[in-house]
Length: 271
Length: 97
Image 1 (cartoon, rainbow over the protein chains, first blue to last red):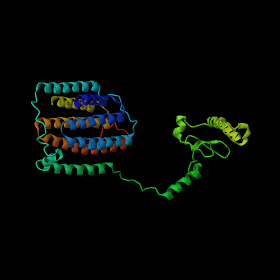
Image 2 (cartoon, rainbow over the protein chains, first blue to last red):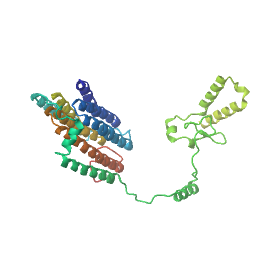
Image 3 (tube, each protein chain N blue to C red):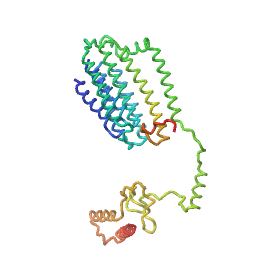
Image 4 (tube, rainbow over the protein chains, first blue to last red):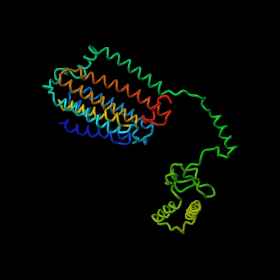
């Protein structure tokens, strides 16, 4: 029963792996396939492999995939340019041939009656697996440990990057900053924080300079490029709205309205 | 029991086509993982078919090898990305330059 629900799901998810453009979507589809496989292992009387499939594959390996995806950049989508002409069509034909050969071949044979693992799992699946693993397969097991150590050392060697120049210290950084200030007049201190003296302390609200103008350096370049920096006139609307809700007459509080007016004025000038 | 093996061969074929068509090295790797998983399903199904645990042991070893392979493969992809700023397998067609 579980098979007939999960098998179409797995095939659809695996086919999606061929067609999705973004690598993150592919990773999520692969997670669907792997969790479904884990359930199938449970159905096939392999509770140990069920747990290992979820912990090792879905937990560790897929997380490693997502980790590397995040490092490389989530937006890195697949190119659609074929470097070998007709490669996609040829691959599809090869896949169809391979799939039909396998499926037709399997349809020709009969596997006979299922023995089942009740006898082999007698006393627990994990104990039975351990008995086989540490007796008949003990050399393979030892070789696996050598493989894992080699893989760990290899990953460390590959991920290591040699530092080519000495690390820049605080004194050198400060000297360079003031050198820049002397040559190009670049401000040596930190940039102004957003929202300073403004009506709002959100990151998209530019700081107001002492003369009332908005400081462009205080908002992130990304927000400015997206055009989501809040302008002072919008803030004026907020202020009048709040004043309306509070029932305060704008004319009776000249200080507040005066400030808001000044903000709006400078923002319009800046535009 | 036949249906499990058929599903396994379908998944293997899909993984195979994915390796042949996809250009992003990480997605190619995912397709390799899909093929390994399909083999594991066949191993576990045949273990139940024959009533002994050798198939499950084989699936266990495949998982261990797959984990080691993913660690090394992703480290290689990271190294290539660091020098080429790209994870596409086409850009790494000349391994030297």
